[in-house]
Image (tube, rainbow, N blue to C red):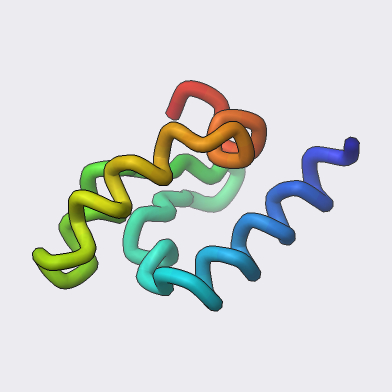
Length: 68
């Protein structure tokens, strides 16, 4: 599967299900976009954080963001 397609699919899914993923994206012009999983978890309500920590290990996260 195309990595760009997977990335877009993941972004849409995150926005619909948990939101807040943008707080975890770090980018500078000319550099690759990186994902900070700790920032992602911390950006959401405390009651959601255990769930978010678990979904970070799903295959789609590993495929889109690699080992981040």
